[in-house]
Image (tube, rainbow over all chains, first blue to last red):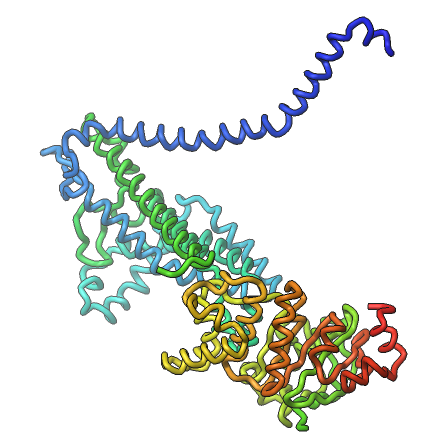
Length: 330
Length: 252
């Protein structure tokens, strides 16, 4: 027996106990605590954000109530009445155009990179696609103004009008900037992200699924459809990711949509406005409390639109997963 | 007996790897032919050459002839898609389509052939599931996902899926290796039943299985066909030294 243990039995015991406890505590528990804290800070962050937005827009909510959402007048100068319906419509319609153009292209790019291209080429293109996703949105806006708008105005829109001018949405004067241009720029912005996600999704589809289809005598296209179908919940997720980006996009759309407050544009070539664009444009010019409050209220509505989109996406993904997990359909 | 496959000077490569060396053999119609041999002997590659699945792997090549009903499936004018509709395949791991219902899993091949008539589809689904000994277990749950079944049921679903298009041949690549013994026994019984009307070629690691289910056995070693003949003769009186050593378990 060592002298120290004879003299300080109590301390030795304590020490060992303490070290054992410390080791235990140091490991899993600390990590668990930290990760729990970090994870719950998300709730705090979202809560604070909603709180601040509601607080900031309180004056506007008190003044207009639900009329703010259905109101069609935005008159900061004379009557001081604010209604956001045209902005909500502008946001939804430009985003819808972006999806209509962007999703088929993204799907095509994703499939080409995962199913059709040689591996090395696919990797090289994937790298470029991901680089595109990192381009700041103001650059897309500048490019939209200096390259896309003149090109569309001179080489695309006139032909569109000649061909489809009998349909009202393709009639009317062509400015260059406008609803369709905004949608196209948004589409270009979501394509890199969405197609990169789709490519990754298709690469995770097991080869046994493709072989099962090929062995049944399926053509390449029929096999590809199976790949899409296998990854469909992820594909929906990717589409929603694109939609969320399009809805919240501010800088580029502000630069090309024309920023004209009206309930409904006369055609696809007409100018319009979106929620994000009006906040970016007018917040610095807002000179009185109700005006500022109305702009923050627009932000609150934008947040809710984004939340609703995400909840819908969750529901759709959950429904598809529920089926594959073996619970009867409907 | 008629010859279903007449394989002449078949060679196959993965890139520069020569995995099948000059295979010549004839496969009988409406019989079960087992392909045995140790890992890496080219059994699966051989099977995949019979329905032109080998060539879908990047870098894979084939030379030689595979006469199917007298027609070389590697001739220029032959569409591999059409070949695969005549020659069904079942894989090592059950691979039903999880996003499709059990019904659609079986009907998918017919739909590829453009059949949309609900009555024809219903009848074919029932017939195929009955043939695969699965109908009684799933008849009340045809709308459930193909992934909701057990492993053995999934494999029988895959067999039903292959049978639905009424192929002439069923290629099976170690169909029971991922299953428990009871599920495997059910599949073996099914194979015997199918042999009455179908030509079955089965790759197996399990020599007892080969002895139980097959009429003919081919022993492959390092990409070469070492010995081929009636199963009884291969197992009871092998002519080649390597075959003897393999079936007595000296290597494998």
